[in-house]
Image 1 (cartoon, one colour):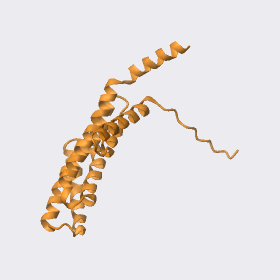
Image 2: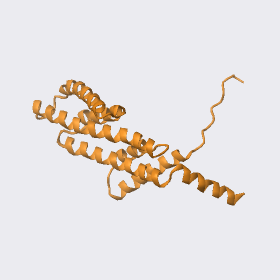
Image 3: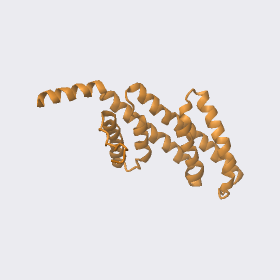
Image 4: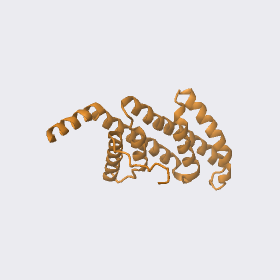
Length: 178
């Protein structure tokens, strides 16, 4: 024996299953409408909590952050294109990133949702550094909608399948077997 405890595989809990179901449901919906499900699936995983209150907090963090970062990213990218209409001087985005993160943090605090800073920063940086010049507005709007869909799907799943209900079903199933 080396004296170190061996890690064991954790059990698969109800939140785990509901998170997976929410993400898979978003992927299925998005494939049916021929749309990329990535951000809806991310929103679904972020939006799943232990209960509705926790789902609202977690999903709200992601959704509010995405909305703030999305609109801020659109505004900063628009300003960038005023400075450089062809959009090929990407070095100008560096000071705009600085300004954007400062404003994002202030807005998140102003809206009393400081935990929205991290997801908002992700969206802000994606818009500034990874979006083609001609699609930055539609890209940002699509990210907001997709995240909202994922969060709403998780909240619906969490509402329809609360832990108490699933625990009763599990107990009834075990009673039938035993």
